[in-house]
Image 1: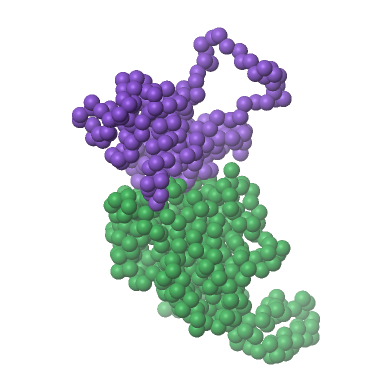
Image 2: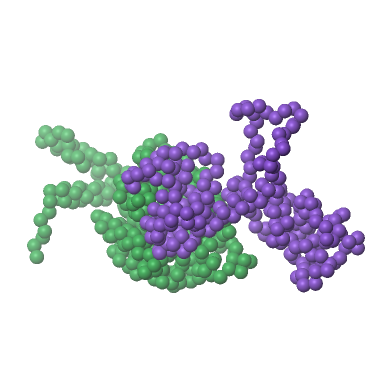
Length: 373
Length: 240
């Protein structure tokens, strides 16, 4: 079979990608030499202005030697059994299509927790099957909806331990189990299903607040002991690792202690689920991005919204996928993360690391047209 | 004890419901028999079967005043809490409690004169001649209605969802339902809509149920719950 014909655009992008890939392998000195040479050549050939990607300042990349990369995420799918609710199933399938059609493909896909709605075997199995359709490796995180029916038993059987870490292209990633809750069920004589349904509601006030817990924090401390403080750290947690709105558990009770463990590191990026909305925060060296849900968007809480958050527009109730979506995260050479919110049926929104680094002075995402009531 | 809690106990006491039972010495079949008072006063027992208190000056067979009833209920509750300092006492949900509170009386400047210096109040007609107790009962009734709305709002089956989706899944505490903006032109419907039209729309679409008829008690209750969540928000009909 002959090679398919490639368009001018395709060839241009291939050429461009090859050029940048080459630059990343280069020292700053040779980059400058090449840049000067190419500019000189261009001038000599009276090509004005020089070719668009000759003089781009990506020399920082060459210096740190950390290749930039991208990973995608799917989060908060809240699956019921397919015969009961097909809409949530169609939504996760749409997200799987999204991440599979990214070009170039992401290095891996993070699943942000709450695969199931009520922690049922059938729901988790369904999610497990669907996620097999993702073409790149999937990193799993657990959410409270996956956990509180059998306290994580079936989830662990399918996906392994709920806390783990890994190193990838110069970044140390940690996945936390941040949705532990103090026992509120024994005293009340709740069945596992009652416990699960209580946790599944946001506004019931009966359940305890989320926490990483003493054991989890100890594990984290130990895990980070061997990590150089200059190494960029990526943390995946289901709940936001800060205090946003307590009544809805947009909250981690021991967030202050967890932040203290993360404080010595130069760059920490936390990616969390649970809040189903575009959510941005920065606490000193820690940058936080909330993930979108595929199932439904949550409204912004009546108080406590972090100052740096630019709200996503109100969801259109007449569009079943509006306000939902998935996303990807681009790790730059310096280990900082740009978060892209792929809002279905809307323009995507990117929250850049430079926006957070400058405390909102630079690169602000587009402002909100329809804020929450 | 907070005024709110005594208010609830007071409401329960005359109705004979809830935790406090009148245990008279002749009541043989009572589950919580209380020791008779040597002075013949009414003895009231708490539902723990142990704590008792007398209503001074009220003999068996007489009816205590509401103030006496409140006083004994408060006393029992205080005793119970002292005995059980670690026990978890379910507070009334804050949201509902907000709806219970009556606002401060207007102070004149908004229109009309303040009350006379002697504090005289117009009287002599039955309309408006209600007591504090009446207001408590009405507030309790209203809150019962709101609570029923809360139940339906949180119960996919009750509202008729065929896909196990309930209102609270997108609207915790009724958030983002903005009842104060109705009626308004609902662009997607191409007509002016009331809050109930949108409730029904949501029941039909995201929850895939059948729309409720306009006088369905569930629809009324959901409306009551949503409105109760927005107490104090200025009305802004037509807002987008």
